[in-house]
Amino acid sequence: MRRKLVAGNWKMNGSLESIRALMAGIRSGMDQVEGADVAVCPPAIYIPEVASLAAGTAIALGGQNVCDHDAGAFTGEISGAMLREFGCRYAIVGHSERRNVYGESDALVAARFAAAQRAGLTPILCVGELLEEREAGQTEAVVARQLDAVLEEQGIGAFRDAVIAYEPVWAIGTGRTASPEQAQEVHAFIRNKLTPLDPGIADAVVIQYGGSVKAANAAELFAMPDIDGGLIGGASLDAEEFLAICRAAG
Image 1 (spheres, rainbow, N blue to C red):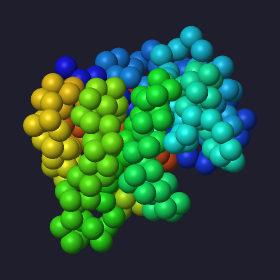
Image 2 (image 1 turned 90 degrees about the horizontal axis):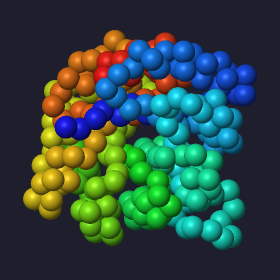
Image 3 (image 1 turned 90 degrees about the vertical axis):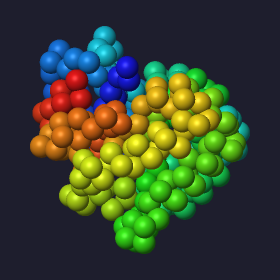
Image 4 (image 1 turned 30 degrees about the vertical axis):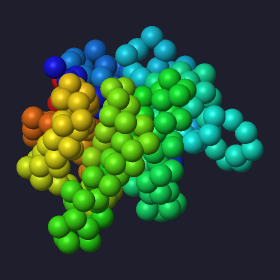
């Protein structure tokens, strides 16, 4: 039985003061979250502070990105080993903002995925289509291409310790959300794509949904058979809203 995972992606938001208040709020409500895993992915500079604030709780940590190299002359990058040293369990790779704003290719995302695993991190692989791609009927082709980049590089076994996050780009930060049925359709496509390669891995892999998830729509989304929690953006910056989403997953 897959256990749902709710991960908060704080993106480039926060200050020491606001993060301390946010973590205090999340900590205070964690005893009401049952049956789901919870993680937060702060800006890298705040990971040590959040690690300290999460100590003694079930809140896991993640990085928002990871370098595709393990060490060396890569100015501005952060390695998987660095994230691990400060207590991270997860690393987001291939978020739509990395792909579409900063031009990261499928191949680079696959290399970051591999680097995360080399460091002992669980990659959260983001896949999803632009609005024009959905309107052109290309959703499955786009998602398949993004998955294939990892499969061709790493093989199906890499998904034994990985999370997939389906994030339709047109629903991220826009207030628009894929309907539960639309999201389920793509989640089922992802699982069915992996099934011929290894049915056990396909059945066990956690596939999150991301894209304007809120307390008001979380329960309906998470009730779908192939939606295993959420990668939460803006709503993760509000402790009560984030906790309500976590409770919906449990």
